[in-house]
Amino acid sequence: MAEFPYVKDYGFETIMNELIALLGVERVLTAPKDLIPCSFDGTAALRQRPRCAVFPQTVDEVAAVLRVATAQRVPIVTHGFRHGLERGESACA
Image (tube, rainbow, N blue to C red; front, side):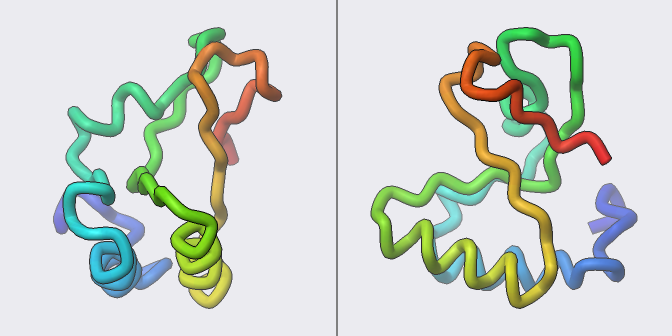
C-alpha cells in the first residue's frame, strides 16, 4: 500500500476490504492504470485520480457503498458517462 500515502488518514485498507466484501474484487478498482479513465470527464480540463472506483450494480449495492463511505467519512464523487455534461464531476479538493 505504499502508493497510497493517505491510507492512515482514511483507513483505506479497511475501506477497501469492506468494499471488496460487498462488491467483489472485480468491481473495486485500485490500480493506477485502471483509474486513469476515472480521473477526468470529457472536458479533460480537471484531472484528479481517485483512490478507487467502485461499480455497484443494484440500488442496494449503491446504498451499501454509501454507508461504508459515510461511516468512514470518505467523500464520494459520482462519475457519469465521462463526457463532462452531467455536471463536470471532479474530485478536486
